[in-house]
Length: 160
Image 1 (cartoon, rainbow, N blue to C red):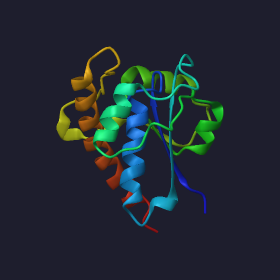
Image 2 (cartoon, rainbow, N blue to C red):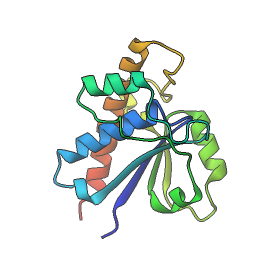
Image 3 (cartoon, rainbow, N blue to C red):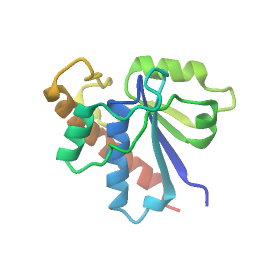
Image 4 (cartoon, rainbow, N blue to C red):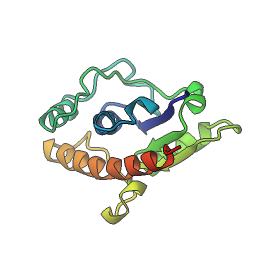
């Protein structure tokens, strides 16, 4: 059985998208459907390729029980558009870049993460990179809320 792919995308793949990947992986591990999904993250830019997540992202994730330290940044590739049904961007800039790179035959969905948290009042997930630890904490809280909404949609669509 082919797994349903979920790919989180931000600019550099060291703050927001690794956090979202870690949250969804942990949430899925608590379900009977974990084996039905492939979860990954990447960036639209190549300047962090091979680097681990930002130390502040690792710290806030570990405090809340998410393991992201082993992740390594990578840039999105053409293959990702074939392997992932759900490509989830952190902000409009990421989404516009993805729309420009998506091949004409891409049959998946390009969405903003915060669309899965409609009560938040935000469509954008701000990049905490130039901010302090409090911004990383707030970013992770927003990600948790949105990932819970995304997970609900994924599990409903995974019902045979």
